Amino acid sequence: MPVPMSAAVSPNPELNPDHPADPPSPSRPSTPPVRAGVAIGALIALALVALALRAPVTATGPLLSRIRDDLGLSGAAVGVLTSLPVLCLGVFAFVGPVLGRRWGEARVVLASLVLLVAGAAIRLVPNAGALFAGTILVGAAIGLANVLLPGMIRHRFAGAVAGVTAFYSACLTFGGAGGSAVAAPLAEVTGSTWRIPLALVAIPLSAAAIVAWLPQVHAEAAPAVGPAAIRVRLWRDATAWHVTVFFAAQALLAYVVFGWLPSMCLDRGISETHSGLILSLTSLVGVAGAATLPSVYRRLPDQRVPAVAVALLSGVGLAGIVLAPAPWGVWVAAVVLGLGQGAGFAVALSLIGLRTGDGPQTSALSSMAQGTGFLIATVGPLGAGLLHEATGGWTAPLAALLSVCVVQAAAALVAGRARLVRVGTR
Image (cartoon, rainbow, N blue to C red):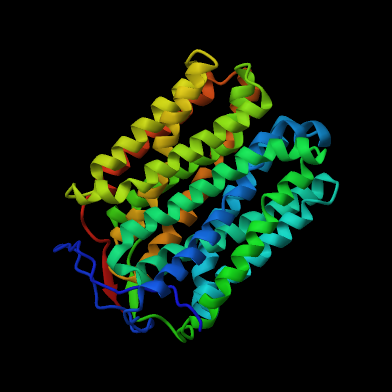
């Protein structure tokens, strides 16, 4: 039988008297409670998809020096390469909900996984144009799936949004850790500078995710026809904008870390293999940070404290990477940075679900936060690379990143408040 990605649905416990939520959208049929085994099967499919969505990006960082030397790329070109996936995440975050309403969210997620395999395969072609083209396809695929999955979680796991979101973000983080950890060793084992390792971290896992996700496509209800009955007035809502700014800051910091942390470590005198392992350690510690969030949330009236805390941890960790004594200080800083980054990503995703009242609202806020957030975050990897090239060090990029942490902490004070975004009917 097809296995629907659903679970018993309960109302959102957060109510906002100033911004009351509308009734659930009739465009989505209600999902009846299902057996535990069915929900577990759906969670396994969600986990495999999540694992496939980070490794193709994080594997690039440890191989960046090899790519630059092999293709003769300038510092600006390397900055563009590290920024391309983030740009695609932003652009296709606006496209994903439109395609989801037309073809069905589960079908679009499946198509994105196929596109991810295609992009990873194109990067095997031995020229710079293929690398950039394949990276665009990989970023587009991840952007489509990224924006749809939070809405699906909110709709189908409405009684456990924070817990399932933490599980999903932990899988994303673990997949990123795996990509950065195995990239350099795969290059040594295969004798390939970077092409085969990039393909190996992306194609097999994406293929497994495609197989696991197929039952979700068969179980999905037919997509709604016509306009939705619920309109989410997000672009004039302060809470929605603060969630977006928090997400943008988190994404900017994360993709600077993915793209440049190994290079930072190399400049501190750490070997290429150990630099990749430091990035992997950062991601693995992040899994623990994301996994602890549900228990933290249950003890607090809202999410302001953990949201501010992750910004502070990220700032301390980044400062340690650049300024702490090498090598032991860098390893300690990587643990602190990992806690901030992993828990911060989980907080950013959970805020999208917790600040909305139903699946359509979550999809709309996900599109706004991820689309706008990733477009803003595009300047991070590119700007860090340009600042490093202009100054010859990492002090100036660090100062800019610490200012982003301050902005993230300020946004957290509003985004973390227990209230829903403004909604209204047509």
